[in-house]
Length: 405
Image (cartoon, rainbow, N blue to C red; front, side):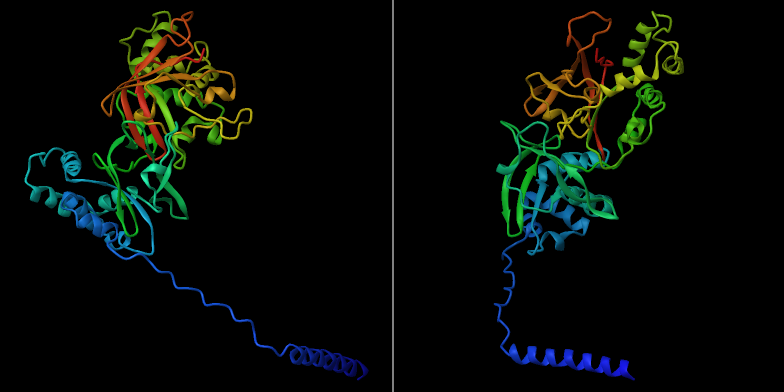
């Protein structure tokens, strides 16, 4: 009973304290100004701006086909759109139709293809890839090498909505690009953003580097070399894992089968003739008595372009997506994954030759020469296939195997 009394006494003390507190603070609550309702801009949104311009009627049809008209007109959001005028859309439709719609077809034929034959999912993918979730005036686009990635509206991982497929605008003189597509006009205003116009559609990639390389003819020895170089490696230390990892931004120089055959023919002293089946050359790569896995790995590392964002020793990562048009016309050194083992290595000497806005020649010179003993950077590979674009990077097919020493 005594315990109960003690508890009741404590309760009354607390209750009285609360009463005194309430009576002592019997004042009106401070009044705060109400939160102002956002005032969104008026006028036509991005989709409406495109629709109102007759020179963009084909791209307007593409937006309609994508089902994203309302999103692009939403004045509570801000966008940048890389659109294409009717001339550029004709180039796209001609290619997308496999030539079935010729460039001189009537406008109705182009509109019919876009509105009926182009899959709605493909149209949505293009529009999402062409759209940034922010307003980017062209004057704020970077000019430095390598170019800066912007996030498109394509989500790479449904569980991580902020992990999105990047797109790469780059501002230059006299030509600017989105990926490797020239920009022909900029800064068309809409109430909820801005529109830049590209020569033709900047299409999103749909496959990873590994799959894209494996589907490309004349690259099977490179794939076999990847397997050999990965011996004993785990996780993202494996080249195969990097090529199959969807959220990287890589640039890979991929020697053709002919390039590997020339190298192996020389290394074997002519014992493996150039006309031998691919399996014979792959067998050479897998024979430790001829070449070690470490040697193959070192050569392959020299074909992955890299930077060192941390500045730490061994901090080079394959984190740059370099299209042919991003490579300067003045020979420029670019680091590679070899720099993780040899920080002072000068890298690869890259050079692009332009004819107008188009790259007409792309070369890469290595420190090492074949046969050995030549002058450093006198051994030059020419790209025989450029800008092969994938979800996680871009690769260029070259006609020689580059040697780091």
